[in-house]
Image (cartoon, rainbow over all chains, first blue to last red; front, top):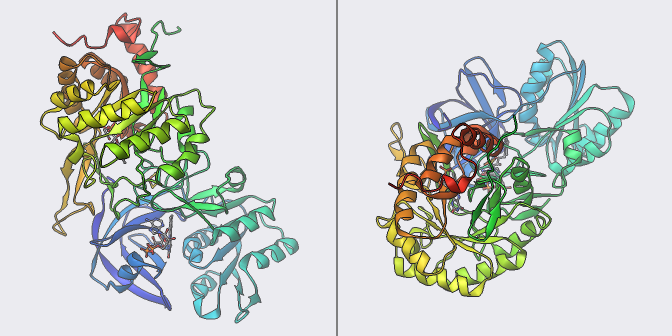
Length: 258
Length: 305
Ligand SMILES: Cc1cc2nc3c(=O)[nH]c(=O)nc-3n(C[C@H](O)[C@H](O)[C@H](O)COP(=O)(O)OP(=O)(O)OC[C@H]3O[C@@H](n4cnc5c(N)ncnc54)[C@H](O)[C@@H]3O)c2cc1C
Ligand SMILES: Cc1cc2nc3c(=O)[nH]c(=O)nc-3n(C[C@H](O)[C@H](O)[C@H](O)COP(=O)(O)O)c2cc1C
Ligand code: FES
């Protein structure tokens, strides 16, 4: 039933400044790329990708950006939140050699997919992009699963100097991959899509309210609901969506250019 | 075997290829979504209710599922009439009628909104006089027969296209209100909007919706809707459009027997996917064939003994 289930926070972990991971009990299955609606009672209910998938425990990893995420940031172990979901389609995880490109908190969405791919004996290269060295997270976690990790920072404080997309374009010239999976700023993902011909999947963010395909708030293109038909879309679909990388809609349904 | 039944219908002067319409507030805030619903077979589309100014709506949680229906308090989010024009203009070529739903606080606002919708090219206007949870709008306007008559007649004299009036089951005197709309020259009555309701979380001891009170829709409210349509049909001569808990062809037929010439589908989109329109169309045809009905108008109101 699509109603928030109240649960106690099991663990709170500081990743880097302004980014935390919260875990909670959730024995039901969740696929990499799916998301939850997280209710912070008295504040808001917001979409968050699953960032940890364990048998009984799931987690989310978020950046403090506004009211709801700041309220969530203040919560401690044992505090209560409401959870509904998982929602959305999740990634299609096929291919022997996969390139992951994560920008900012997008890495949180990709991490469970990377772990899944490795568990299923495929190999992966993961590009983690951030503004600066101090904002990089999940490097250790992904290193542990034995994938190749490449870092990019806008200011060059660590790894490649430039965007994750620039780095990805470089790698794609040198190496053959079966597919590219990405989550990050939409303009970045659009540039990546336009520069490659191999199978492509991107995780999109749109303002969400119902998350069950009724209210129409999250729609893109010709009535594609990011909450149900997405949040993961393939390259072929995205090429036909004029909104992609161009505009999103605010809570009132007004267009906001990226 | 090809169906024998003809499921086209008319709402006064507005012909529909089939009686299934998209209810206001479901996948109808942008042109792309409405195009998709048209492809799913809807006979007409009612837009999200639009006001003069943009409105963000209430904070989440705004919608939850209960055992027998959907509870929502979206809070009338909409981009405002000026920005919404762009969406309607993209549907200019559509052969499926688009009906512009509008909400306002007084007759003056409704007139301006109605005129703008008409300029954008909609086929009819639906006055939302019944939102159960938006302060100053909806119910506070929609339970006063005198006000309903004034608003309806003011919009009527200022636009040429048909004007429908959507009513609330939360008012105690729905047939009196329907009569007031008729005397204001409404072209049709739409009934019902969602039913005022609440859900409390036992662990947190607080209502779940941020607005506390919401509007209930889906399966649970069908008997309320059917009763309202039946009562209204006893009191007015203009066409009625039935809404509330319609999930199947038989639900639609039940509303028609109560007096509805067409029906709208909201929560059903969740329960039976977007192509619920095609599914219900087929089920209506099958029912009519089985019971030897050739046209919709032969069913409308048969339950009035
Ligand atoms: C499918 C999906 C998965 C996401 N996964 C993550 C994640 O793993 N980690 C993470 O840090 N962030 C994630 N986000 C973004 C996250 O939902 C927003 O950062 C959060 O809602 C901001 O709320 P706020 O009140 O703190 O900020 P505000 O100041 O209210 O808003 C900041 C930004 O967040 C957007 N936002 C606000 N409310 C919503 C909403 N209900 N739905 C969508 N966007 C909203 C606003 O449009 C604005 O651009 C995801 C979003 C989506 C749609
Ligand atoms: C998410 C949601 C949003 C709605 N928004 C509006 C609206 O903007 N204007 C309106 O007149 N009715 C609105 N309604 C009410 C529906 O149009 C309809 O009258 C009601 O849901 C009953 O029909 P149903 O049981 O088929 O859903 C909304 C309903 C839902 C579920
Ligand atoms: S959030 Fe309501 S349709 Fe996607």
